[in-house]
Each structure stands twice: as structure tokens, then as C-alpha cells.
Amino acid sequence: ISPVLLIVQIFSAEQIRAWDQYTIEHEPISSIDLMERASAKCVQWIVERPWRDKPFFIFCGKGNNGGDGLAIGRMLVEKGYQVSFFILEFGKPGSNDFQAILQRLHNLFSVELHFLQSKEQFPSIDKDAIIIDALFGSGLNKPVQGLAATLVYHLNKFPVPVISIDLPSGLFIDQSSVGNTVVSASFTLTFQSYKLGLLVQENAPFIGEVQVLDIGLHPAFLGQSMHTPQLLDEVMIRKIYKPRKRFAHKGTFGHALIIGGSYGKIGAALLATKACLRSGAGLTTTLIPRCGCTIIQTIAPEAMALVDDEERYLANLPDDIERFSSIGIGPGIGTQQETQHLLSFVVKRFRKPIVIDADGLNCLSLNNEWLEVLPSHSILTPHPKE
Image 1 (cartoon, rainbow, N blue to C red):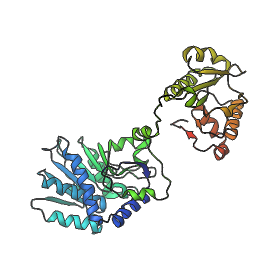
Image 2: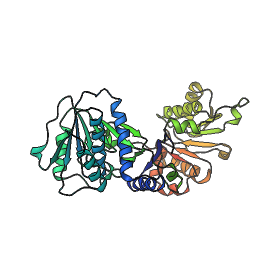
Image 3: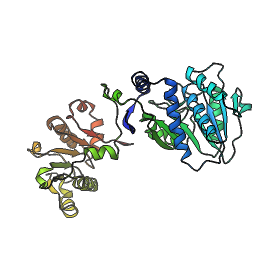
């Protein structure tokens, strides 16, 4: 197994469970030893922080996330840390691995272990303490309620660092968590890969700083046929980047067409043009309404300009758009009917990759059927309010 395998694919809860099971069967390793390995990675991260003299309060559910919390706490106790354990009591025995880890914990002396059955048993947290949240993690499929929700509210009252294991408790892994009661983590130590719930804006107040820990899940699982979102990061960009060869020139790195701008929004087309030039296109041409020609030619002289007959918006395409290697369309184009027709022509007739941004997406949202005919490898770049 690769010693470093931080995956940029984003997996669903079902896929994560399947990956765990695949690792158990094909490494092979027992589920409890996999839990111990994941917990050891968390402990390794913790001991690298200046928290050696701080008391740790670990809150555990009775599933496998709680088992992670118990194992982390046991390892910290073995390293001389001051640890108090709090198990949220559901009246059920808990998962098999949780029970096994709990038994290992009982084998230690002087372990402070509390079972929480009412809010009166909730502890007050020292101002210099660290909280570890191992209540539910990524196994949650319904909102936190009852005593568990009350405990989450209680923990969120204390202005101390909170470390959530895998996911902040109360957060769903791959669906909206709006309205949920969620632990407000300072740090989230998630296992092996990012989860969708860690990458959506509405969850930002809960997740804190995210650390992806490699726990050695089997890499062969990634070779199975599956479609997952991917996170674009520096490592991936460096793999995509094509270094210049010794005798390279502008004619060997493609010819990009930027279609952008309208009256009052020429700056959007200019920014896209300059970005295209900086990102490595051999040649860049910008299709601009007549009102933007002087601006583009003055501020981005490296780019060539195609000037539309219309003064204030774009309505016409050159006859030979197939000569371009790729097209970026949308920045500042507006949503006039004529401009929508122009975008329709590009989407339906141009068979190379297209990047659609800004007003191009607004036009696309008014004509959803165009999505079915987008060229392969096209890119959409939405953000909130587009």
C-alpha cells in the first residue's frame, strides 16, 4: 500500500464504506485494526501540536466513530496525556468494534470514564482544555436529536479548540445539513479523502481547518469503475501542466478564443483575456463588441481582437470558429436574446472543449436543453448567484 495516498476524489458515504470493506478483505486487515490505524494517525497529528499539558475531553458515541475516539484517547493516555472520556449513552451496547475498543480501554488503570444519560451529567470544560468530538462522524443519516443535540449545544458553548474526527458530529457527509445541530469544530481530521460535506459553503462555520489523514485504505479500490467528483488541487494541476519544450513557440500551444464583454462589462472580457494569456495559450483572440475594441487593444496588446458589428453587445460569430483550439465564453456578455443565440451556436456547433462562465451560465440556465449537447471535456465555472 502506498505510504502516501491523499485522494482528491470525493466519495459518498456508501463509497467510503465500500472502500473500508475492500481494504479489510484485500489487505487483509481486521476492522478493529483498521480503526486503530486511523486513530494512530489522529494521535500523530495531535502530538505534533503544543497541547502536551492540556486536558483532553473526549466525547464518544457508541458507533465506530466513538470507537475512534476511545482508541485516540487510550493512545494519548499511554503517552502521558490527561484524558477524560464521556460516552453518550443510548441504552444500546454499541457496535462490535466500539465494544472491543472499550474493553481495551478498561484494561488501562486510572482512566476517567463517564456515561452520559442526562444533561445534568454534562461536564464543564476547562478554559485551557481540548475537546475531541467522536460522537457520530460520517455515519450520521438523520439530524441529531434529543440528548445528543443538547450535548452538541453544550459543547459549542465553550471557547476552546474542538477536534472533530472524520466529520463534525451532526454534519451529513453528502447531503445538505442546513438546519442541523452540528458541532462547531476548530479542526476536522478526516480520513483518506475529502467528503462533499467539507466542501460546501454553508458548512464552513462548522468544519474549521480540515486535515486529510492517510489511513492506508487499499489503492486498488480506486481502479474500480466509479464516477466521483474530484477536487482540483496543486498536485493535480502540476500533473496537467505541460512544460515548454526547447523549440516550442506560440504556434504549438493552441489558439484560444475568448468571447466576452458588453457595454459596461468590458473589464470582464479583459480579465479573462489576460488570464488566458498567463495560463499558457499560444495564441489568444478576443471577440468583443465594438465598444471594447480600443480597451482590449490598449491594455492587452498581446491578444488579437475580433470586433463584433454590434456596438454594445455580442450578436455575431466569425465563420471559422473551428480553427480555434478551445473557446471561453461568458464573462460580461449579458443575457440579451441575440447573445443567447450566439451561445447556442457555439454549444451546438463547436466540437472542442468550451469553458462557460458568468453570464454564459446565466444564459445556459435559461436554456437547460443545451447541456445535453455540450462538447466533451467542457468546463462550467459556477459560483453563488450564478
